[in-house]
Length: 302
Image 1 (cartoon, rainbow, N blue to C red):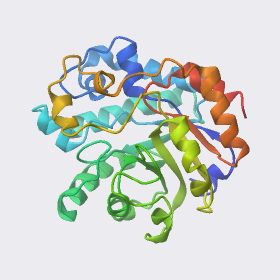
Image 2 (cartoon, rainbow, N blue to C red):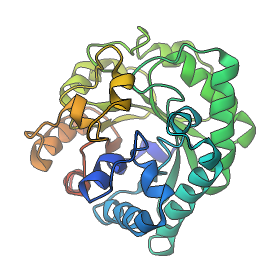
Image 3 (tube, rainbow, N blue to C red):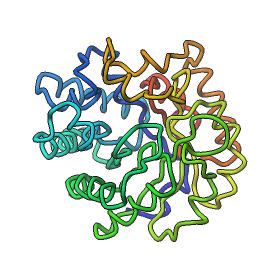
């Protein structure tokens, strides 16, 4: 894949997990989007959701592998399905190329422990988790996408884990509030502390448009292609024991704890996107609660 791909304006997809729930996916523990991969009855729904994002203008789709990480599967007593879930998600993503052969497929490598929190486990544990998932995705994808990582340490470990696969990567760092990652590090540390060789760009992932705006100047200063995957949650700053609370969820839907913003219509979201594009952003997409209608509005900005 061309290392300069994101130097031109590109449209990414939106948030698969929340979109699948909105389309009728039944919650199952904390499996979230992985439940659509687990059960064959949802495979057509999953494929059609990918296709609807592409029809809306997405040039890049991300594999539905966010909750197919080993730690999440262990909580749901499905560790034995790890390989199946990651392979099947990739196979379904690949099917979109039968209709839209130019589609680029990003292999989603999520945080390997909790979401929106820095992973403080040993490097050996984190490395094993990243490598085992990346090894499966590698044969099916065009590049790796580090999806909603909350510390520079995790990003650096993930880069080491994919080195043998000789593929470029896009960094999706997360900031819940303010100007620092959940680890307390600054965005600039992603460039300052890591020696990058196959970097496609850096985006802030699963962030509100207002918080992205707050960090726009710094991410622009990195000197690499930059952009965003904006969300429609009220907050991504979890309360203490959020993961435990989610495990005890009544609905199996993260918005039970994180809320949904009703004001972020496609028109309003695209107004934010235009401002960021005018400032130089070239990697444009959505995350949770951002559907095909939002992506269609983004694509009209090209």
